[in-house]
Length: 304
Image (cartoon, rainbow, N blue to C red; front, side, top):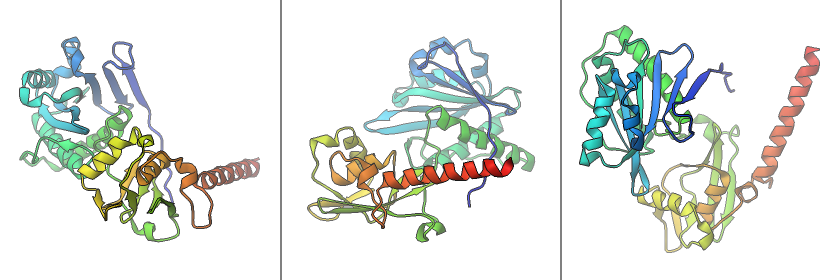
């Protein structure tokens, strides 16, 4: 049974009025202040007092087809960004995100704690290449400070995906419900490939052991990068001369992206994936919406 969560207010401010420029984000009643900025506009941010405080920062960019990050901390975050802008070994980054505090209560020890925890979370999520290597050694914090920083970290995890930084979000993992009827399994077969998938917490996941066709068609199009990354990371491994096998559960952005990778060519996943009773993914979702509307109408009548 799902648990109802209370909403939160997130304020986003476009610092220069453009959608692709520096952005500031704050959660109501949280002391943290998050700023995302393009590297090309680093000079424009020199006067921002928020960046002259103690905090943490993440450098983000592409190396080949994979996103890479570097996580650091500093007493003056802008000074650290300037240093990395001049550092040839950190040339990969094109964006940065910083986290400081409005009440000036973050200390060097707090920054190191957050840096260490963020490196561990990013490595565990395994969505990007973390160039830090191992997490730095940190001095133990008093128990109240640990509790405060864990809360601070929770808010960071909430804000970053809203700003387009997804590297802390854990991969959806199977749980006890995965082997019950609570989570329906969808299946598709195409050109000798057979794949099974589930939706877990709103994420479409092709399950370990599924197969995908090695031969591709030109219509694979934009999903060729998705498949190449899966092969490079050994989540798709050769099964025989014709098929790949999924070595682990894999998330996809949509049923169609998943179906296209499985088939090696463009497919409409909303009709390709089917339930055991023959219903398509599209039929299943339509019926869910209709049932929810009926329940809502019934609840409205009961309240009158």
